[in-house]
Length: 315
Length: 227
Image 1 (cartoon, rainbow over the protein chains, first blue to last red):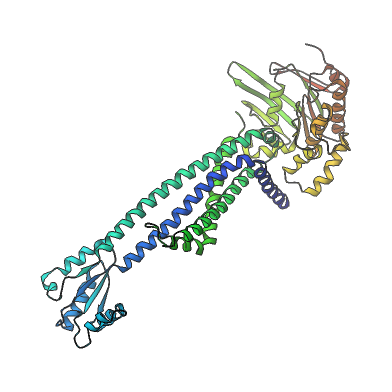
Image 2: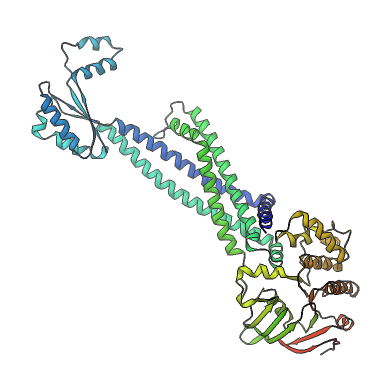
């Protein structure tokens, strides 16, 4: 009996392959629209990862520099650090001493002897500072409010510096990402639905073309699984083929664009990152695409065969 | 073996296609069912192959109570019964061998067993040497014998033949009937519906006459009489 099941399973797979080959003209439409769906999925994934990465990188650089007066006591400084760390939105406070500041200044201006000469160890005009890193760049005002308190302001040699311009950039990218995410989701849903409708139709036409054979199968006592199986195998094949085509097409597009845009940046979309993100995860992406393709194919053929192959006895 | 107890089938409320039909067929019997078009013969056979459900009444075949069968068990019923249709229902794009093998394939019989079994059955129906022909290269009688081969290849206990000679000339019709008799001799219960007076008279078997959805006569060795 087990052997019979194995034989049946194999025949179902074979039937699916035959159907796939025989229905070439019908299959093409289903594969084409499924390829578009999966390509949309892929682009959304890569674009989302790229934007997230860009935001992360800019966010990492956002901080508030609190410049300290030269005569601040160590006690007062440590109190200030502790108070800052007590603010919920503060992620990290780093102390940069006058010497550290000088060292950084020298490194930043290595190639500029005039600027280097203007500052020496004995006469260091650079203030010590606290670099305050926020958890969320959108809530930087909470830090700002604290720093503007008069008793805190007293400890500072000049106004704190906020990386406000960067925040604007982040807002832009975040907005674009949100838009892209929703557009991506809407696009995926629409294309997935179109794919399913086209698969429905493909299956319906196949069932119509083969109605005699299917009727005979049923009269001879073929099980439901045996009749349905090949259709499901066939649409799963659409999914696999579409996934492979979509990954190949994207691979090609990324290669071309990586060469074409040497600047490595295309508006807000960092093509360099996108390409390498795609290339690094090729096996994973291909697997995910194939799985999504199989899922769309299997679900739509299950529904379509249930609907168009009548298994019930008439009452 | 086959038991129908007051089986009624109503399609629309005004008239019943089958009206409280009761019938009992013993194993290995050869029963001819006659009746005009629309008398209910086809409906009766469709109930036996579970293409349709009775409105009321009880059907038991080979120990299977049809009332208790679920839709997903229908294939199991059909595997126990061989069916031959008036219009053959062969697959035109499959050869004779493939058409017969098809019945075995769909129930998961291995390729080796198929290779062994199919030629034997084709021999029984007298189509040895025509394995590679396609249905359109065969005469009507030969096609019907392919259909019979397909129906008996799984060695069913019951063979239902629905007007198998309806589309055949007398000579070919008789060839088909002889094959059915042969199968019956091997121990298969045969249920045959026909219009053909000649066949009924020559066979001298039990004849059940259906008229207006009822059994109007049920006689052993009956002769056909025009109503």
